[in-house]
Image 1 (cartoon, helix red, strand yellow):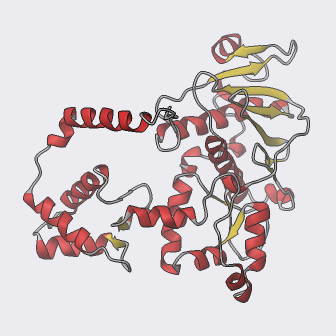
Image 2 (image 1 turned 135 degrees about the vertical axis):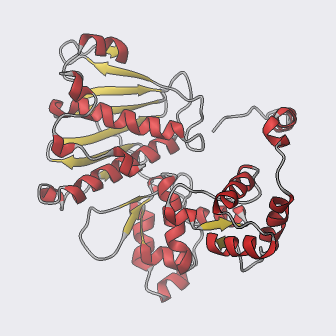
Image 3 (image 1 turned 120 degrees about the vertical axis):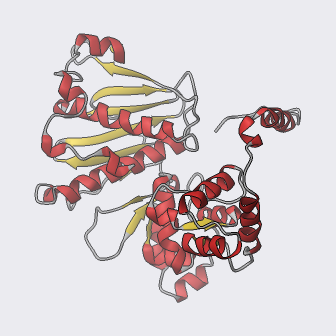
Amino acid sequence: FFPIDNKGSLGIPNVRKKIERIVHKDKSLRKQVSMKWIALLDLILSKKSDSVSYLSFLEVKDLAKAHVEINCSVELEEALKLFHNRGMISYVTSTEAVKGLVILDPQWLLDSISKIVRHDGFLYDFNRNEIDNIGLADDLRMLSEKALVSRDFLEYVWDKGEVDFLLDYLKITMFLSEWNVHKGDESWFLIPCLLRNTYEKKIDGLKCIFDFSKGFLSSEIFHRLTCLIVSYCSEYRSKYGDVAECLVDFNPELYRNFASIACVPGFQFQLLYDSDLNRIIAFIENKTFAARTLHVIQAMLLKAKSDTVIMGAGTGWEILLENDITSDLIGYSDARKQLLLPWFDDVNRAFGSGNGSLNVDLNTLF
């Protein structure tokens, strides 16, 4: 998100002109491609209709082979990536579920997502009478009050055949995470942007501050961080279920500006989003896990930064660590040089390679 001053009604036109000037200088736009690729694009887009918003990759492959003589999968992938980069279709390859579809109408994707992902906790205007009649009133209440959505409700909102794709898409864009806190056969998912209540109580603990005051920090970044932490803790419970049984009845505290989520007994993430000072504060109660908390949150923010859709490429932050003895805040580099306790009690633990039982691979979340 990059704010634009449009008070004089010139902000947007000026941005448009700037984009046009840059585009004309972009050498990648002068790339020569086979006429087969142009014919393929026309063929793909001709399939778009009110009832058809996407094609499977296999359908596109068959069309390419039968009508434009593109028989090589590698060439087809390159063509689809080019069309995606030019905004003509949407073709994302991050996961197998997403890779299987070529979206002919990106607006369909936006419309589908906007029925679930909203801003500041405002729900989509669902037909309440219809929802009552099909027995999903309690599911809608959970969505409204707890920001939790059931798979049954998603199958009502979206076409049943689209649910897996859309769920996968929302996971990789960090709008949503699986919710494995409660036992049961039904699948539930957390959508942090729908959380309404604000946390106002005092929070105790040693502070680790991620300061964005020189850049920009939106609530959406905090919500995505919440999703990643929920996924991290869920991954731990799945991997070490015998140890984590004591967490089955634990109910995380989640607010628009605060998240308290336990990973293992004693290892608890407590994050506060301070919109006034543009920072995220982690509060550490058990100092044994200070180094790991620092490592995990830093890795997650770096992941979010690598995706310029989620966090602008120029977004940066400074890390300030509280001195356990003096309560002074010390910059990350200085704290590391000093091996400041408990953040850097030894070099290995500072980078998250301490207790092996806690080493849930962060790459499995990304």
